[in-house]
Image (cartoon, rainbow, N blue to C red; front, side, top):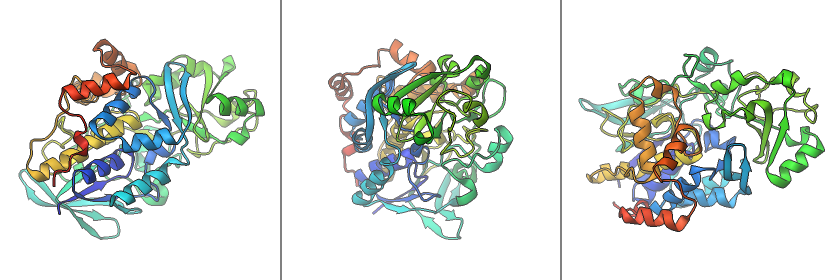
Length: 429
């Protein structure tokens, strides 16, 4: 049986594992930490704005498994908060074990605490990778590889381009730094920029321990899923909006208010907020960060390692590496990671089978996002743009093109018209 090796166990890597396994390949998933899902362990926002459309497109394409889990683990559904409608907030504590069980039940070999540091190549022109070298010296062979390592880390990048290591959920000090596999294979990565000219962008949120908040705030949060608390005028810092990776939340409301979402913890929608200042806000007198642990000072820096790729998710100039998630573009969000990872996993098996690789049509939101983000990377302004179904520039485009819908039947019919219904469920090997 052909073997697919996936490097990185975030939402994109897990989605790639599901689609590659369903297509018939033997799948090994390498993850450098002791948890799957990566930033998905501190995220939790699904189905807001155009992400509803994208989720239903994925389901119609045959990639429903991960969305079933996030829907099942939702603490709140149909939630509205500034700039966003009909969101679903999953419990960040409950989702990872269920995803792990799904992959195991499907026969995916999960290799935790297995950090990839280099490649061995079979051929240089064009580049063909033969095996992945792990930090402990082991070599993992494969027929095709999918890199979903994200774009955050190592610690030095967070120090150079941010406010230092905040010991985020990726935990570089404990498990070692991320290494770019496409770069090790011989290709150069792209680095995203922000408005101040610096590289990268701050993760857009942190986590507060709910029990450290006032009873009033905690009860409102747990009842409705959202709490919006005005910030004293002297504590408003609008400049932080330009630092955020999540430009769909770069609205004045997010500077003038503390916006909390209930994802099991209290998700605070700001890159960082000095603890001394936070505790001056009524109701936050005893506030305490959970993760990132240094959320009073900084946050992880992302978009420092993006591979050049084709719209099939194949890495440019490398015969047998595909990519997904933030590794594949300046994408924001779990839905975006699942969308790109699912296509990468499916096309990895098409490559093994010698079939034409699938490029999703731009008449579908997923296909349009993948194409639009790739095209814009050629321009300087494109390096400062982030691409998400949930807001900012792309959601506006999505609505203008008539791609946004909250009707599952209409979305499925759109997928059916392209002859792609349940294509990710086809067994090819």
